[in-house]
Image 1 (cartoon, helix red, strand yellow):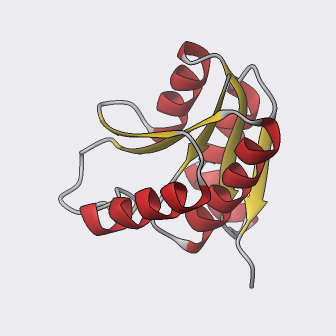
Image 2 (cartoon, helix red, strand yellow):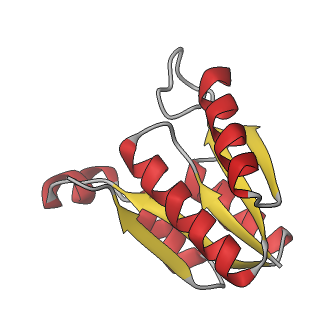
Length: 131
């Protein structure tokens, strides 16, 4: 089975990655790191650049976790991509990072985390960054 982690180059993404590594080691499962963007903006700070991915590869190789990294550039939002990949890979767990947002921000903009929590058919581990 596979543990899928939604990764963004941010403190929340790092917290999710650390939690996913711990779970992959504990369960002896493969880790699928997913980074996605819709590609509808000139700059998307959530889309990992090569130095970010190199750092992730080095961290995962150092701890000896079997892993795969996928970057998805598509028309769907991150939540839809993660839900679809979780289903297609028969993920046993999805790990996501949560960021602090106001209630008004969640109401107006919606919540990717909420979409994932409601849409994924397997357990979801939601973590916050320290601080």
